[in-house]
Image 1 (cartoon, rainbow, N blue to C red):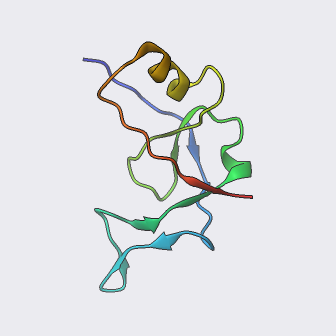
Image 2: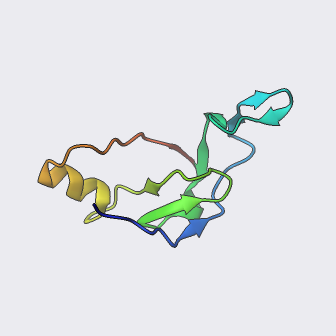
Length: 88
């Protein structure tokens, strides 16, 4: 087993562009977003991080030498990546 303790937490949700999934007027705990948009300036330079308000989800960038690139270079399996839209 391996564990990852991600210490970096960013305030990066673009609230004007993000579409929240509401259930009875409250944000759903299981699927909180219909469409998640992050602020490009907030995540610029970050490698592996969490986002305030996004629960336990983990995020990474596709910068050179980062997690995304290394996983694909090494052909590792068991991880899935989903591209998230960034606002200017």
